[in-house]
Length: 364
Ligand code: 5AD
Ligand code: SF4
Image (cartoon, rainbow, N blue to C red; front, top):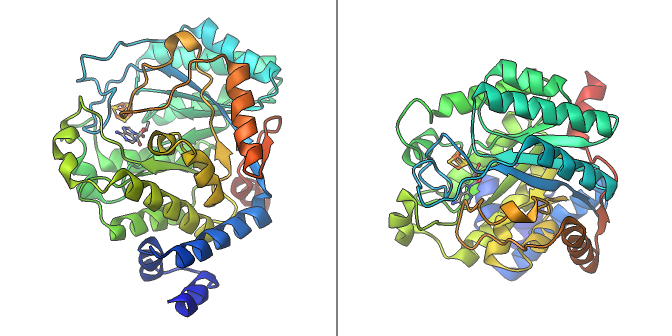
C-alpha cells in the first residue's frame, strides 16, 4: 500500500478512485503520509500560519427547517435571539480594536427586508470604521441575487454557503420536501455569489447517515469543479430535538467522524492547494484539541467565537457545541496560545484573503 500511496500522493490530479482510496486509509503509517503531504502543501502555499476570523452569531432565528439542525424553525425549545444592529457593530469595532482584521457574520436564514437592511447597515458601518480594512465574511444562507449584490456593495468580501452534500438524493433526505429546501436553489445561489464578486466558500457535513465514502469523494470533486475559494466543513453531530436524531443508530462513531473529517481536510488541501480551509468548531465537540488536529491535517483558518457573552449558548446547531462564556480578549488569547503551542503562527491582524481568489483575479 505504501508504494501505491506515495505514487498517488505525488500525482498532480486525483481521480475519484484515488480520493476514495485516500478517504478509506486507516493504518497509522498511511495516515501519517497523507497528513504530512497535506501539511507540506499548506506550508508551501500558505506558510505555517493560521488566519483568525472572529465569528459573530448574529441571530438564531431561521425560517428553514433542516432535519439535522438544532435551531430549525420547528424546534420550539430554542430561546430565539436577534442581536441589535448597534451591538453587532460595537462587537465588530471591538474586534478591530483588538487587532482582528477578519470577522464572520453568521445567522439562521431570514430574507425579510428589515433584516436585509440591517445587515447592509452593519456592513457600511464596519467598512467606514475600518476604512475597508476589515475582511467581512457572511454566512447568512440563500438570498436573492440582488441581496447578495447589495451586501457586496456595502462592503462584504466573502460568503460561505454550504451545499451540505453534493448528492441531490441525500440532500433531499436531510431536508423537508418543500420549496424552501431545494438542491437546485442552493447551486444557483452559489453561482449568484460568484457572479456578485464574492470570495465564495462552501462545505459539507461529514458522517451523515447514509452518506458513503463515494459521496464524500464527490463532495471534494464538486468543490474543485465549482472552483471555490474557501471551505468550511465539519462532522455531522446529532441534536436531540431534530427529526434526524431518531436515526442516530446509523451513524459512525464520533471518533470515526473526526478522523474522516481530518482526511477530508487533507485530501482537499492536496487537490486545492491555495484555498482557505477552516478547522471547524464542530471538531471541538468531539475532542478538545479537534481544531488543532484540523490544522495539522491541512486547514489554515480558525474562527474563535466572539458573539457577545449574553447571547452565547443559544446557537446550538448540534449537541455538545463548545461555548466558553468569556469576553473577546480572553477568547482570542486562548485561541492564540493553543495555535502557538501546536507550532503554528496565529495571524490576527491581516485579512487573510483566499490566495486562490487573489490568483484568479490576477490572471483574469
Ligand atoms: N451537525 C453538524 N453541522 C450542522 N450544521 C447544522 N446542523 C448541524 C449538525 N447537526 C451546519 C450546517 C450548516 C451550518 C450553519 O451548520 O452545515 O450549513
Ligand atoms: Fe436554518 Fe441553517 Fe439550521 Fe438549516 S442549517 S435550519 S438554514 S440555521
